[in-house]
Length: 291
Image 1 (cartoon, rainbow, N blue to C red):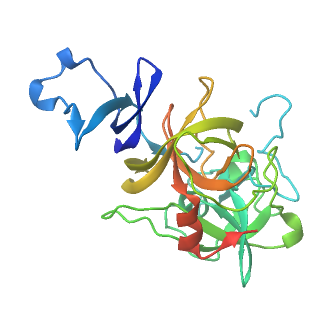
Image 2 (image 1 turned 120 degrees about the horizontal axis):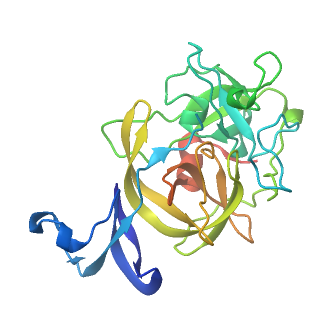
């Protein structure tokens, strides 16, 4: 499912040793694998660590914890962390993802999220309406439009993608805020680091805390329109045995805990691992800055 560089884990214990990590859907004892399929013990002088991750999928949704904000309701001003989404032109399904951050350029202010949350995996045209809450969360197309799809980075099937991102121009600046639910405003953008403790607020799992285990992993991710490869991605694992994300959390902004510096944009994962783009790649690709 992926390959990257991270800390070698043995019997759930950290070793302090950097390793080439093979992320596999299922892990089996070596005695149950034919010799021709056994992975090498080292590559380029680095040890190998095989880690079971399940199947990586985009995290768009097809109850918040007690005492936390409910991101699936209509919120004005809308805050990052709440439910947003598009309307399927063919009315075949309803969906919802997460408002990641408020961003800006010289022309205006925008909602930042994933391509698959705002642009239906590159299938919508600029000008498509974006709703808060998303229609899966009972958003009303007649009253809940909050933004208009502006631009996105198209997902490419034949190359290693770097980002899954899009922006939608805000219809009324009074209807949005840059303050992430339960976290507050992001304080600039920075670089992710291995072992960094991070936090996010998403439409499905609400507030969660995790730790970055890799900042340079290549992964294959299953989408509705096919499987896409992404290069140089961030891997986050939840702390205290809790998942960091789930379906519907796609688009969440990941910030360093303590500093609130934005480091990544969540877009995919499995039951145990979350995948995110480097925020610097996202902002550069869309030519915007955090608001």
